[in-house]
Length: 541
Image 1 (cartoon, rainbow, N blue to C red):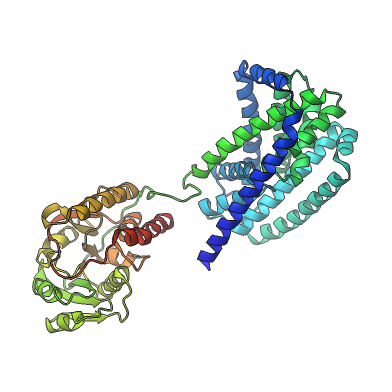
Image 2: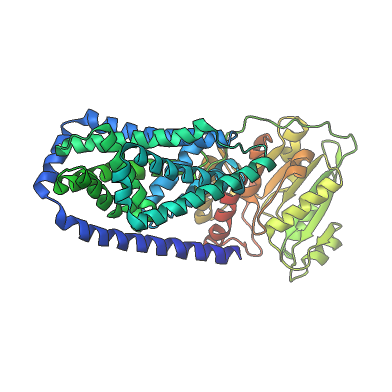
């Protein structure tokens, strides 16, 4: 179902983008022939000669969204200002790319994903405050020029405004019900509602500034009228950013005020161009800042805590398990190399047979190892998960695992567990690249180095061997470990334990490439399975 939902989502987004592009092109074809090229060029020169005016206009426009973010924060007090501002700008930027104002859901999505705000609280507060925004537009237009505003609105406008009023009432009641049930939602007071009106006044500063470059000297009330009429018309905007609708409504407002329609169109286009430039730039920034990005994290968060190791019981064993799949040729020799004890503690050896189709399990039992059969082949990650669970059930002093193919030296077990018993680490990796490598194929060496470097960046931790199959965990680390992928464990286990604050160490080990059997790792399949799992692990941390 998640896969199908993802497909439907991608299709819907693609369809919306196509519709948006087509609507924008149609609007451009309708508007462009009416533009006086020379007058437009002169207005552009005026703007270029007044960079302070451009900056001031954009700052005033940005201030409007700062005020809206403050209003949102007053309704959701637990929502940080930076996340409120980013959510609003995400919607703003998307509305200038998608038709029918389909960017609005991103406002909700942004805070739900980044701050784990409840979707109901985010949705109802957004609906209510956006309705309040539209009501503020109507109120301002009615105050500054009632006859002109309502005359320009027309029958269709009245119908849309009526729908806005209904939405405002419904949203207010919905918000009231939610606020009674949830302590993290507060009904907006007069200050929060007033901020909407002030925000539109701030936006009118940009409209007034652009008009001066065209040679139109608007009064403050006229600038507010043009702003409110143009915005009210965009309630039913089809093209991205309301392109075409905005210009038509703004020109009509200028004409009612007695200004030249040709100059008015240039003023409307200039104001809309500045707004669009701001919206797209800041919208893209808001997709990545503040952290985490809307697309999710690509690195672990910096960990400020460290797990405290518990005392180890004197009689606690070291549990060493070997995940095995079709290793009949190597498993016996591997078992024979396991020491009976390390650091004065007995070693309990377990072979986790992951649905082998050969005699791996029988040969392991014949060699004296305890064998846990998983039945069907479930994957290396699943086998390691089972082994860790067994180690925890037996209250092991350390839980260790290495492959059963003979590549990793079981006789070096004492080196791998030493940092845990010395109280220096909770999670230890035996690094082939710190020790001796008798043989490794060049392409595998290269692949290991590349994947390890990537893991090092993602984990914010110095790592020399991210794919090592020889690892030791303290009891606490083993109990806390979560492997979210059956295919493999290497990267996700490291990221999981580092995110939880467990201390990491590497020790040198010797390594000799397998002479029997066949590795399950094929680069394409490996990356297809591991990369999504790493992404999920980072964003679950």
